[in-house]
Length: 501
Image: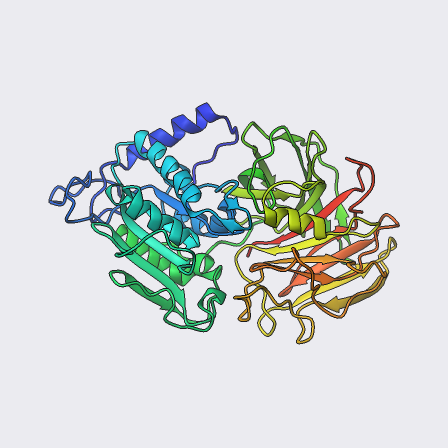
């Protein structure tokens, strides 16, 4: 992935155009590392032939689904980058303000997708792009193909863990030519399948099944990636595994600050990277940082992160107008450069979609810490995953621990979630009794398809308390910050723990 640290629109546009022109002449036997056209190719390098679609390297547009943003494709775009694609060829963007009441608006989402694709094609010599859609993004792309002349602009379409149960805006053929189609589905482990192993199969597509992968793993696991890459380019990838983060390695990151759920960007906000180091005792120690970043008009920021021993990162986020809670976002070290980092922030007052208003109004704002645990590449399921909360006083003496994913306490997602599809846990003292509860919170706004809430007491009345979350052997720690206090005060905010790998 091309490295670039300044996130200005002019520089991005130049790099973007150059990157696309480099690959404009690829043909059916091309690989990302050998973009020279095959002189024997007869199908037309610019895809003017509507009967035969070349397998070649094109820009890929990634379309996310409900509750998601561009970072759901982080691992996938990094894998493509490790196999020769550059940032200009990997367009993962956020669908913004896409709820109409309590439901997503397919036509509004498709209009945003169409505008992005038209802009991309206007800046390149390509006449077609490839598409990867996830969840309800599959329905969005189907609408664009059939109702918005998308078949004139797409070559290959991949539906990974697609959702087809929404109010359809498409009738008749769901795989119209001349595009090539592929579906990636699980053998029933995806919550969207509701146990139906054949859910997601489309006539006219190459339908690929992967055993025991959940909805997010269809994007992040190596096997679906290999199948997808080969389908799009005609060649198998040379690199199939993500590297481990390396001490001393500097990774270059670009990201965006957005509203939780609605993906509306926040301009002029402060983002402060803070080094977090795990001491030999196990205590997590925050270290000072000299970097203060400010998001641009579209909510974007960029920075470099050098990995140190036993180290991860906190990103302190504060809105300039103090319209949102402070967020202390903790995450594991990156393993590759990334341009899809997303930092989610919660508004202090009711605003946005019905879902966002219901969620934020359900969260208590007493003198207790509120924590969100997010898994970007794997849902959290009892029997497969372990999630443990450990607490310590300011002297780092243990105060006890509790397992969240037990037979009695495992979160139970919304209507279609009996097979498990929880990627976000909200931990808070819901009944404000200073004790852990007996299980998931049964409250409107706190339990939906991909996130659930658990009654867990995190003492934030005294500063210096520390909470550590361990998921499947990986631990991230955080000091407890109150979710109340005066607007913008240092101890007012929420903690978000991100597990990416």
